[in-house]
Image (cartoon, rainbow, N blue to C red; front, side, top):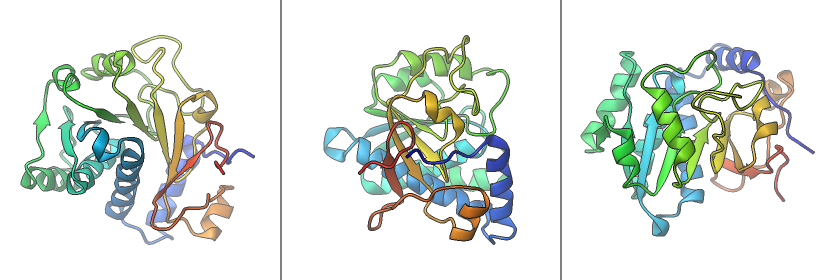
Length: 237
């Protein structure tokens, strides 16, 4: 049976409730999300298959998740490079960048060149709050993601996809189907169009909160912060 999905509207409401009634800070939620992303990379791209990870970050919370993931990947022994052309001036994002700079994690402004010397890509450009037009410099980046043969892990949504309606019918994201997707907290409706490997991350929901939003909490194993589920959201056995 497929896991129930979380609409963009309810995802935003759940985040707000987690930070109020749930007593989580945005720092905690971003840290947990980024940790989940890093563990998904570890499962998809073991160190012995290539350590170079290119993390593409957008200006919103999805990009913050990518910055956190890059830090964890560095500590696992990977060699992350971060592309973050429109980073927020928000104090949290500045701290996340400083943490990476202290670790000597390189930042690049040339995505296509960095793409030529990486083993795996994390697409943390746009998440569940994305809607409307893809603005510069991201159209070219998404086209490169669509065209590359390097495996891509999308965070919460393949960038440019509509959360409710799936892949775009035109524009730079037309035909973009990454090899893997990690849905944070719960799958979004777009998963019905997704054809790659699918993970769920977000091992922090209480039973009461999950029930309130009509969500299924998959069975996480051991220390794992992620669990792989079927392409339609059904938990893999």
